[in-house]
Length: 160
Image (tube, rainbow, N blue to C red; front, side, top):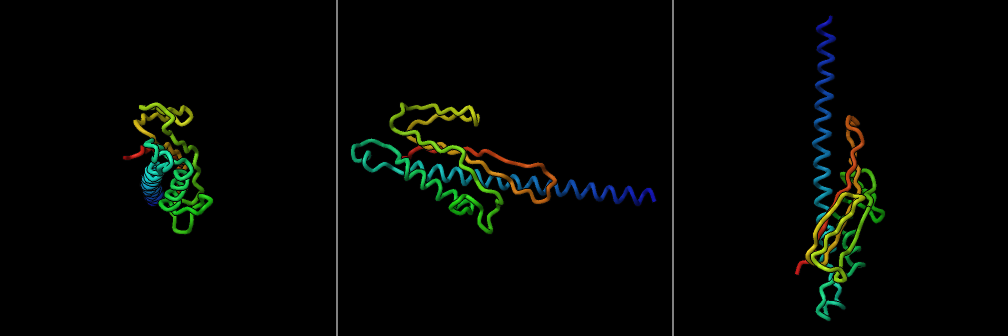
């Protein structure tokens, strides 16, 4: 009888460890997909030239176009609706928050060191660029892991 109880307990323990490993693997896949989406959105927004300044020979980012591009790319790559909530088929379950969106433009002196102590983020920009930080929650499958959330950071410079 003792061996039977021990065997059942070991099977339960083995399954719990297996479920934990599967949940961790899916969490890593989620963070990598979301990070790629942040990088794509930052890159797309950094390419939104201010045409009026460009006519005068000044390379600058149009902040309103950059924000539109950021929203569009995040929604497309993370399967989100206009309210930044996941649509059916998305790998996320909770809304994505844009915690920081900042355009570093031609009015700054380059190289520009951007620092944000709140998010422990520092980056050096050599030309106009965009800094983007979003907050993503991992939709746990089995509830074995505690809540997992990330502040994903991305930066891109104007390419010319």
